[in-house]
Amino acid sequence: FLEARAQANTDALARLLARPGTVPTATVGQFLNWFESSPALGVAERTRIGYCNAFRLVLLKAGQPGDNMPTGDVLTKDTVFAYLEAVHIVAAGGTQTAAARVRRSAASILNQAKAVLSLLTVEHAQRAGLMLPPLAEFLGAVKIARKELAKGSAREDFRAPDDAVIAATLAAWRAHENPNVIAAIWLALSCGLRCGEIAQARWEWIAERNNAPLLDAAGARVKNGTGTLRVRPLDPFWSEGLARLTSGTGMILTGESPTAAANTFRAVSDLMRAAGWRTQKATHALRALAGSYVAKQFGIYEAQVWLRHASVTTTEQSYTSLLRGDTFRPMPVSWSSKLSSNNVLTESPA
Image (cartoon, rainbow, N blue to C red; front, side, top):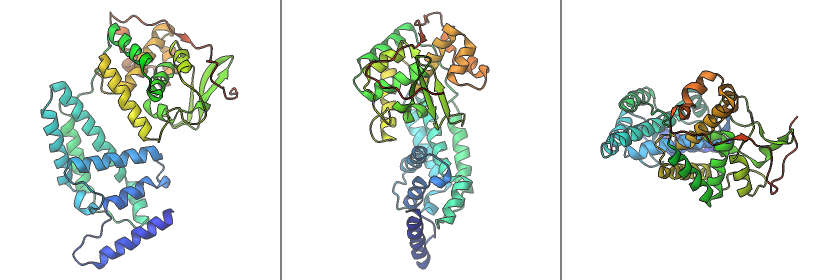
C-alpha cells in the first residue's frame, strides 16, 4: 500500500514538474495522507491523526483551507501570522480568563501542527517522493507565534474546588448514561489514568492479584515510555463504576477510535465545567483529585507510586493542591478488594 502511494505521489510530482511556472511541492492532502499512513515514523496512529487534524485546523483558521493547496503556498510565515491574528480576534471577545484559555489552546494546536514537520518526517517524505518547501520561514514564525500566545497565558494553577463542586461532579457522573463518559471518569478517579491511557484502555487489562483487582497493561503507550502500566484501583470509585459497566473484550471506550476518545473527553470536560471546575485540562484534574485522595489517606510517597511519578517532588508540586484547601474534606477511600459479578477477569499476572 505504501509503495503504491509513494509511486502515485511521485507520478503527481512528475506532472507538476512538467508544467512550467508551477512550484514542485506536494499538496497539503498528499503530505498529510502520507503522514497518517506512515507507521515507519514511530508515532502512534492516533497521534499522527491528531497532528494532522491540528495542522488542518491551523490552515482553516488562517483562511487557507483545502487539501489541494501546494505546501509551498501554505508553509509560510503569512499562514502562521494569519492564524495568530484569528486567535487574537477570538480572544478579544471574551473575559481575561477566557482569553487566556483561548491562547493556551491555540498554542497547543500550533505545537501539534508543527509536529508533522520534524526532521525525521521531512526525510521520510522526501524518500517517498514528496517534495516540501524550505521550512525555516514557517517554523521561525511558529516560534514567534508561540511566544506571542504565551503572553498573558501563564499556566493556570490547579485550584481546589470546594465540596459542592466535587459533590456535583460525582452526582453528574452517577446520573450520566453514556458508557464512554462513565468509563472515562471511572478510570481517571479509580486508577488515575491520563487521557492517552484512558483512550487505549482495554478490558483485558483488568486482572487479579492477591484476591484483589489490578489494572495491568503490557505494551501500553505510557508517558514514561516503559510500556508498563500497573495500578491498584481505588474504591469507592472502582467498584461503583465497574458495577455500572458491562465488560467485554477489546477497547473500554466504544466507537471508532480516536473520534470516540475525543468526543468522550469533550463530554467529560462539559460535565465538569457545568459542575464548577475552572481548570484548563478538565479530565486530567480528575487524576489530580484522585491523587490527592491517595496522598491524604496513604501518604505522599504512596501517591507518587500510584500516580507513577519519577520524583515525589512532582507529586508534591502538582498533585496535592486539594490538600491545602480548608474546605476539602477527603472522601474515605481504600484499595479495592472486590470485583463486580458481571465482569470476567483475565489470568492473574505473575
